[in-house]
Length: 208
Image 1 (cartoon, rainbow, N blue to C red):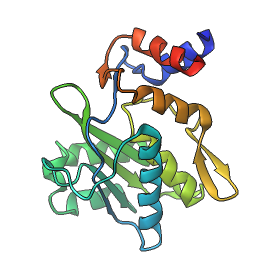
Image 2 (image 1 turned 180 degrees about the horizontal axis):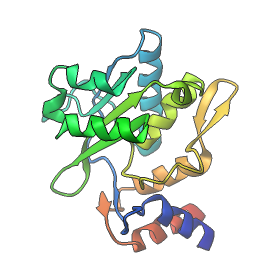
Image 3 (image 1 turned 30 degrees about the horizontal axis):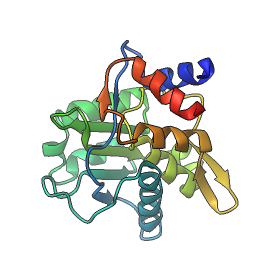
Image 4 (image 1 turned 45 degrees about the vertical axis):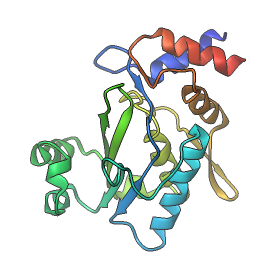
């Protein structure tokens, strides 16, 4: 096992507030996209399908429990979010969250919900299309956001690196991250863990 891989994987799932926490999806994705142009929407849907493929996840029209479980909202300003019908029922303390997002200058935020086994049952991605977010080509942006929705990563996971790379065709998952997602979704790996030994098990699979 590579010590570098083990340390890298551990960092990707270690919270800035302390502690290790990993979770993956425990059900197929049922996406719903809001605020995208007619050109952007199918491209984002394709990016979600590509990220799901790397995990061995199916993409379906509806989740039996929730209807849609992978929701993505693109807005021009955070103040638009409270005006979206029903979003306040999905996002606890939406007004307070909007205030925090404004104050920190954030352009993205993800909210995860979990089932009884600790696996992801819902992910809500909030995006503000500012100049920094729009600076990347849309295929690269979409696949990066999709990859970040495939697991409960650390809140600092992608500050210095990206899970995707630019290609002549647009974008692709970075091979190392694609292998990591494949290892994380192996049938004999747990759907959730707060034990750092989980990271060493993932690193061992990468080296194998």
